[in-house]
Image (cartoon, rainbow over the protein chains, first blue to last red):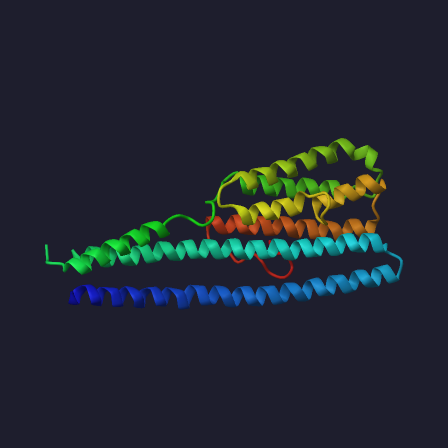
Length: 107
Length: 153
């Protein structure tokens, strides 16, 4: 029984190491990326408002561009969500490997 | 073989079952046809939109063909299991009532011609949208940082 408890403790340590390493870095990267993207889109919308004021862009056209910007925010969220699933699948694969190695060691 | 306590053996079996259940992928694997298809559509849509300051009637057939390719891509992504993120991206890109490729083509059809400013700004956004689609697909193949604020790629 002692062996099994030790193996479980080692599995828990290894899995925790995976979660605080790769996933934490991924989250930091996503937050920084989302902030930079929001600033870029805000700058675009301000620029289009300026073009409308100068008569170089109709309000109707500016609304289409703003809808496109909103779509890009939605698409970016889907990219983030999809990449998060990919990372989680990779993590699950690594956890599987850790557990199987530990289980083989028990036999 | 060493002795394993029955409780430990049961725990071991439960752990293996949980691991097996966790092996089901939560997102579809990379499809090698998607990246060439999206890259080609990105180039063709951009080339077509570059001509949107000209009368729509002269380009109606080409635009209709591109709209068909966009809808096919959206339908294919929607039909792929565990692919909702990419499917949603393609639907936004193709939809005539949204603001990307499908929306730009619909506006061109409605108005006859588009202003040079709308074409310039709209092309940038459509290209950025395709880059987001490509970014997700490339990450299915291998980890890549392809979503900077300027749209990546």
